[in-house]
Image 1: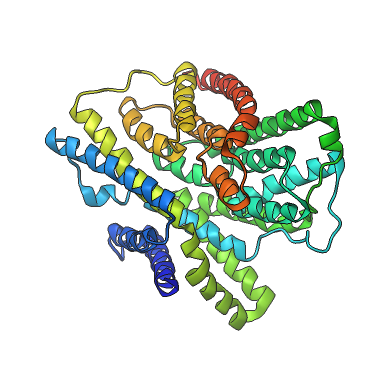
Image 2 (image 1 turned 180 degrees about the horizontal axis):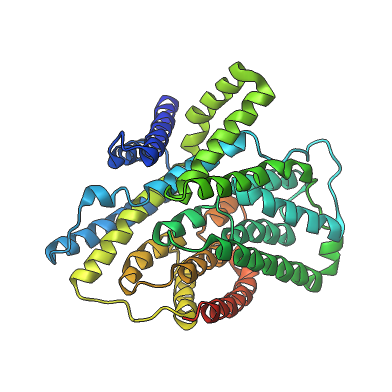
Length: 433
């Protein structure tokens, strides 16, 4: 299986390169990059565990049903185009994976762990900033260090889930952002990111006040992680590079600019640190051994695109229109509630975004408001859903109870939903919707 994983890693990288080249010059057909990604997905399907295989097959079955209904009702589209609908999103996720080579926070093994309230604040802020760029890796890094001191505490688990998930509100390097931009390419980043940062700040304040009020002793005895904030220059450089490239190349998708920036910056830093030869070897090793680790999200996002388009086409064929004619603060809040309710029963936000994104396009919603709602749905839903990626990772790797994670984060989710509704109404008012 190691050889097949290496082949899948190479296929992912080839798909990544072909898609980026095609963005600048139509040297290849766009679907060719997607074909390489699907090839990797088919290989890696057999590397999934039983639960992941079942989930993948279930989503694929629903996609087939959707397209069968679409075909029967005369709404069958160009399927080659449909299987590439989430291609740019997957390419962005591949690019971000390379940041793990150079951007992981150091420290923790030989250092004294910070304790108390200040340790909580530093660990939360540091984990949030690092995970906003390199995602779930930071959660596992902290948890691996803490588990050596004993079972993960409720306070530590609240920190891990909320600091990570709240980054989905604003980080352009998050899967949530990639899924959202597929349907809202015209959203104003100058509005989406600052508002997202405000929502992430609200998440921190709510969590901080909650752990202070719930158990003063738990906060006083909290064991944190020694974050080195001077290492944040690389994520900051990456954000700046993306904005500059977006200004210079406004016709290129933001997702592809993020992917290009991430891999180029990672490669340059790697060569500077280790030299051309060793840096090249590390880069090659990452392609063959680390890229295949994104197997679950790869298959989820590839199939979600097909499912979303299929369900939307089926609904069109059955003449089932979205039950709204105008998308404003009220409509956004109701839609957000529906997505969060679905998250409780196991529907991943990427599925909801894929279906609603296709379905709602008919009423031409304001893309900035829609983007904010989608990002909020991911940030809140992933934090308390017992089957979200971060929840399943904590359950499978550390034996944490999924029910406990849901129970500890439900009150937080309700409060964040209230804050999200207020923000959506405010944005709707400012945009005069």
